[in-house]
Length: 314
Image 1: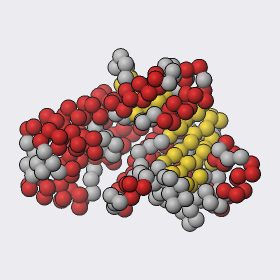
Image 2: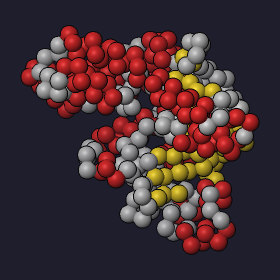
Image 3: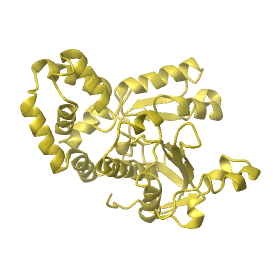
Image 4: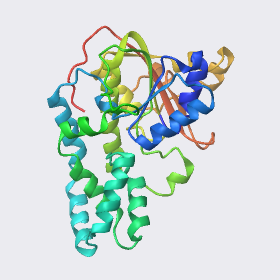
């Protein structure tokens, strides 16, 4: 949900101070910032939760949790070798461990979403030349060994430490904005990403899509959005959702563009060719190219069918 722009926009559309709107972010610090922003705009009824959205549905089986954590916790072999080499060159001092633990308590232990913030906290405490970011990522993976620990320590409300899970079909509408490679943001393009990073994000996003589908009532609608350019995280994930989940693709242009603009912008905003979507499906999604817009992002709109969500492989 952070930084909160989408949350406050939805609250304004809903009215009533945002009653009925639930905003979720893995980081407690970010959830608090979203809540502060909502209150500053008068949306005091918005419910802000610090939790891992993959585990928000109350009927997710323990085995499914274990499988998800295993996916997140298993690095590829080349990265493991690099971490071992870095560890030999840079030992992990006690001061770094203390800073690491404090940062994890504040930001959560998600190596996709929290690693940069935690790394900054560690180097602020011990210095940039003392530890590497690969060492921080390695420590984060070590935390992902127990699904029960994840559920006990991270799936809590911001207030009262109550379990933040919901029964299936709890929501009429869901905006799913999962972690992504963020390569639609122009400054991030220069940092570079490996192809394995992209594949890891795409697989990670499918966990969120499956849980969101469980939480969506039959006939309810979900918008899937990213701020990246890769087909793996956009068109190919849409194709996966259509094949593996009880979802139908709707025309995202109907609710975002005026009638006369749909024809003009149809081809310019269509999804990529040859990435799993048919010609009509390509024109149902919205792909904003950063060469024409300030940033690049993607959106797809789905409707939930009356079928069970099966345990599909991701």
